[in-house]
Length: 149
Image (cartoon, rainbow, N blue to C red; front, side, top):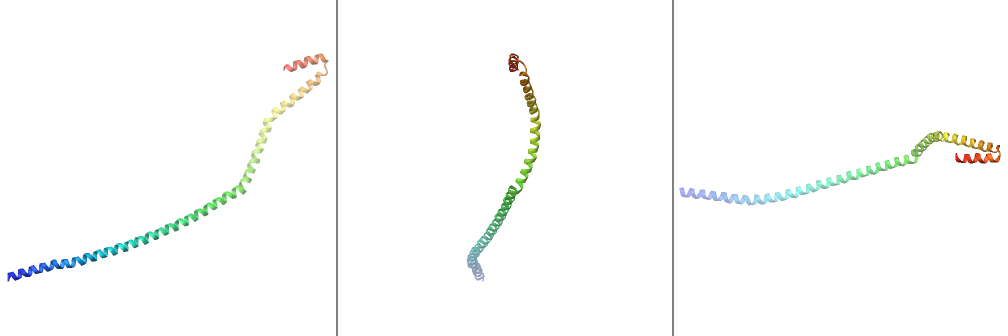
């Protein structure tokens, strides 16, 4: 009996090896098939998500560009309004104010010079008038002296 049991045990071990091989090959094949299918599904999901993300980024960029254009147009309008309406009035007011103060400063600066010129002109005209009162030879001497002054 022992040889029969030994033979049975050997057959059982052989069957287990064959069963392992018979199960291992289809399981390996199925594993590879599942791995490929999972890879394709993951690739599709990643592509769909990246496409959706890209579309969202483009939407955000378009919205931000529109907001930027609107803001630039608003700022341009404000600057134009300022240049066309407010600036001339402010400039006119400032120029009038400054011209008034400049005019006063010019008058203050010129007054002494004008007074000096007027007084010297009057003195000269009196000198010329008084010269005619003297005889000609004295007048020549006086003119000669005045020329040296």
